[in-house]
Image 1 (cartoon, rainbow, N blue to C red):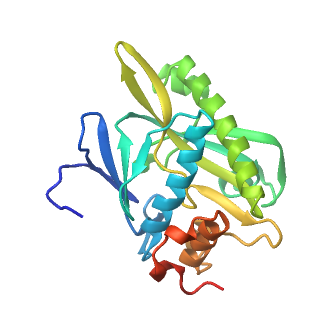
Image 2 (cartoon, one colour; image 1 turned 120 degrees about the vertical axis):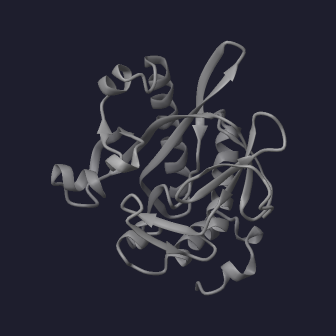
Length: 252
């Protein structure tokens, strides 16, 4: 990694550097694992490599079905070239099965299928623990316009349909996932596109046959075998041939 590059932003799991062309950035995937808004931290060797590869795989396929996103190409094991966007300060969470905070909030048993997919918005603000917000809050505080919200909801539904089918085909149940959006400007017109990443860091993924967790909950809940589980997701998606051999070891 070239340390002389101009760093634009560093988050909990990624670093953004100035890109080679105007309107581009380089997204670097770190091995840092965090939970509970950064209260729990660890270094998991190889996590950034796996998430980079899985996110590339997913974003490429979403582009192919017409879900525009910021991904341009993978540069190496840990970096992607992406379009520069103005991040919308919202996390969009799509839930298919009760798990995590919705189970606690509504007193649902974890693993209960929801009556239908539920989409929630959270305000991106670590110091406030990313509170859940309504459409009223979003439009009142001008975090996103009504049109942008419609576009984000429509995209979230398409992504959910695509990911559910993709994971189901390899024996994985998509419990829920978080996505983020960014604005791109073309002349005087702006629109929102999918941004950030889609990986086991941002999805709850359960083995369909056993219910075993294959995602970040393994870290959150001290279940162990975090990297092995992320690697298993990559293996089932058929992208292991591009993974370094150091990551491929240790899973049987």
